Length: 112
Length: 112
Image 1: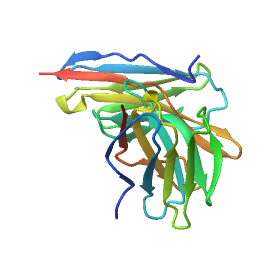
Image 2: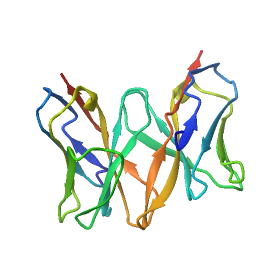
Image 3: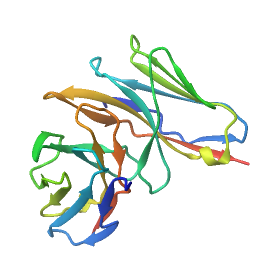
Image 4: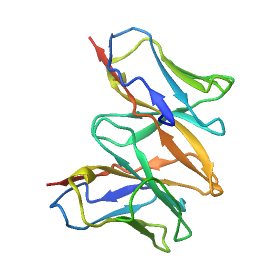
């Protein structure tokens, strides 16, 4: 049983570009949450998807958007990249109503 | 004020030592509590849940004090392999669902 998988694992982008990160949840999980982890900080909640809808957003601008597909996989899109968007982006999957979350290995984004 | 506060460390201890980490949270409505472990450049992994009655898993003991909004983790007989960052995590409910709120993490270095 594959756990949570994210792609790509590493990415380098230029300021102003756009990026799409992908996440496949653990088998049987229907909820996907995205987190941003800057160096030396804990993960910060970006948003959560359930039933293909965004349920709540953390303190992130509209440049951050996402999508969930019928197979529960999810994408995180970031437009107009800034240097400060450089971070480890983590996807966590869970079952609706269950607080236990499993994390993917993350995508390390570097904006230059 | 951050929702979850931890001493970032690092805590430098010799093998065999006992070390304790503390964490405070600000939202009295927080419902579930966890310690996650994160190795360098890896994803967070659930170490243990935390209950008011206290819980123990081998060398690890976690405790929750709801009145003081305080969470602790005790590691006995430290091993080199315990070197990692320990993240204190609480869940908060909003819009009918729960999200994870992380502290910045406490770094532990166990030396021979």
